[in-house]
Length: 77
Image (cartoon, rainbow, N blue to C red; front, side):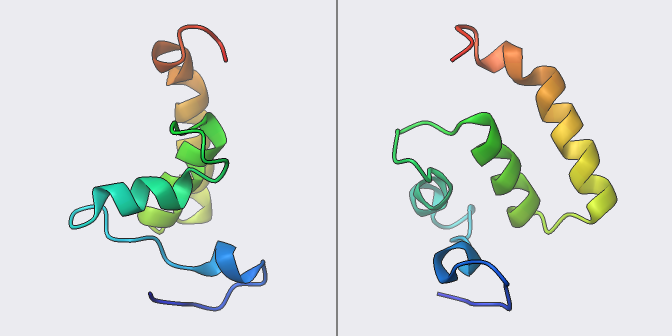
C-alpha cells in the first residue's frame, strides 16, 4: 500500500487501491461507515482523492455532486 504525507490519521492517508485493477478494494476504501453504499461525502472524497483534484476542481466537483445527488438518492437518505 502506498503512503504519502498527510496531517490526518494514518488510515486517512493511505492511497486508495487503483480503481481500474481493484474496484472492490477501491469501493471498500471509501465506504468509511461500512454501509455497503457510498454516501455523498464518501463519493466526494473518493473522486477528489482518486483524481488528485486541485482546490478549484475540488470545489467544482463538490458543487456538481450536490447538484446531481438527488438523481441517485431518490429517497433522500
